[in-house]
Each structure stands twice: as C-alpha cells, then as structure tokens.
Image 1 (spheres, rainbow, N blue to C red):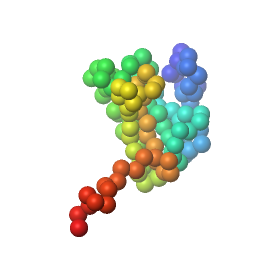
Image 2: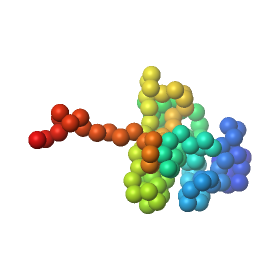
Image 3: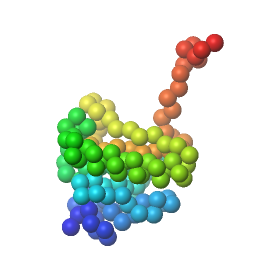
Image 4: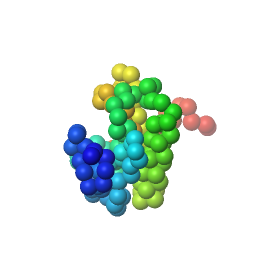
Length: 124
C-alpha cells in the first residue's frame, strides 16, 4: 500500500528515505508524506511535504490534515536546521502555484530565495 515503509506511491515517490542527505528516514503520518525530490529544485537541502490525498492548495486544507501536515513540516525542518543552521518553508497559492497539489518546500542553502530589505528602506 502506498505510504507504508518500503513501498512507493502511485506517483513514484519513494517512501523509505531522503536520498543524498543525513535525513536518513522519511517522515510520514497516516495522511502526510515528506520526501527529497529525485532532482532537487534548489539549495543544499530540499524536502517536499505533501498530503497523501489530493488537496489542491492550502486554501482547501482541512484542520485535521493541516495539523498532521504541520507536524511533519516541523519535524523535517528541524532536521534541516540541525544540519544546515537554517531553512525556509514555502508554499505557493493561486497563479503562483504551478503544481495543483498542495506541497510545502523546506529548503536551505544557495538557490533559496533571500528576503532582503532594499538599502533605501534600511534604518540610517
């Protein structure tokens, strides 16, 4: 069955490990899976957390799945912070969301968006 240890989901997402990182085990709950993408999108560490059932976006997320999703995001983010010193947690909505299945990125290192204050707005 998809989502159980040692199996692969219908979409081909390995559920056994985070390859290429010291995150040695996957994080999953009954309704949520966290995994390293086979082709990292950015940064030194890149983990994606998804609900196992189809939920189009954060705006359609119910509170039960939302609580489990946040628990897995927190667990995976803690591992990334422990390894790299910090990370960003990101999802997109509306026209910014290109994949129409809710997913949350946890990323650290080069290639991750940096939110900076323009020099003109910095205190003097």
